[in-house]
Image 1: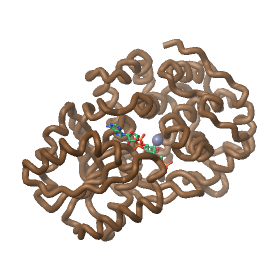
Image 2: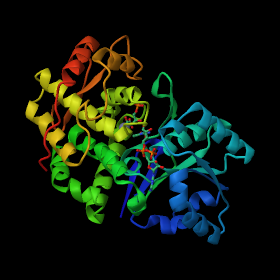
Image 3: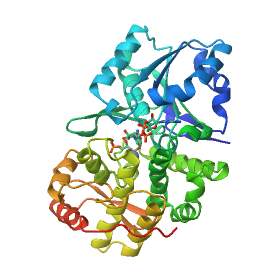
Length: 375
Ligand SMILES: NC(=O)c1ccc[n+]([C@@H]2O[C@H](COP(=O)([O-])OP(=O)(O)OC[C@H]3O[C@@H](n4cnc5c(N)ncnc54)[C@H](O)[C@@H]3O)[C@@H](O)[C@H]2O)c1
Ligand SMILES: O=C(O)C(=O)C[C@@H](O)[C@H](O)[C@H](O)COP(=O)(O)O
Ligand SMILES: [Zn+2]
């Protein structure tokens, strides 16, 4: 059990990591249920697995709770599902004293957070993440978004939750492919600035994926602590600090766009391939050793994750992928800052990357084969 805090002045909040916490949810959310009603947003898979138990618990505690179900899948991070959600909140007569709960993975968290930030000019919301990805990353930090035809997360807000309640036991029903995808964002924290944590991942990755309680909790707490620290230093990504959390995402979002946003490649899978590409591009520029890239690729491949463009099913050429990158929110004055590495645990923001060079690099990467698993 761990209680962390993200230091953001008046927007500070706690993040509770506790196995079994959902069985006591009414007690954990009492500060919000005393103020008003609870309006729950979940997706079709999560609601089927977990809502009956949560609803029964809230009812026995006398908490008024209403549920809106969004179709599961990345395609629901859309204008149309946002409109349905806002219409439902307004039809429910949402008041600013009510609290909106995001019960689900990153899709639900991003969509619900966005709706909460704009309905009635902003309502409180609480994150109850149910995927590994959401528990280690998306539930913390206040980035909300939907996708548009132009690209990933291009419309959204910064809107911090009031509380994040993480119960690792809820992952018991999560498909193993989704566990692996979330694990890529765990590995990310090691690559950013914590080489000993990457060493730990190499030794314990299998145990995390098998949901060994102690290993899983260590991975979640370490990840959340890193994210809370970085967001606390640069909430709105204006100081080349929060951008570090985007490691692997400039490549990754282009791969997601090329593969139809979640239809063939999950966000975490795209980030895993993207981190390997960031390492390989860094090695090509002489910033780090090729063996660093090989080591990370070997670990992810040993965890049965894609690590090359071919594994990811991406066939678009370098120029087409770079065209997706031109929509990246980090783009400024015609240049795109890139997250590159001087080695494992040493990520930095490079401002001198030429997109033509990235396109050429990606064409070369189409010829790279996946390494053999070696964990
Ligand atoms: N805001 C941020 O800081 C941030 C950070 C990282 C990722 N993201 C976003 O998060 C999204 C990806 O999130 P995700 O990987 O959680 O995907 P997701 O929310 O789509 O969930 C993945 C799948 O798992 C199912 N699921 C969720 N919890 C379950 C459970 N406990 N048992 C059974 N099934 C369950 C869902 O129904 C879905 O089918 C992307 O849109 C990405 O852009 C946002
Ligand atoms: O919280 C952040 O900051 C991140 O970059 C975390 C990422 O894992 C996440 O996928 C985020 O949504 C990407 O942000 P974006 O600004 O590139 O849309
Ligand atoms: Zn991400």
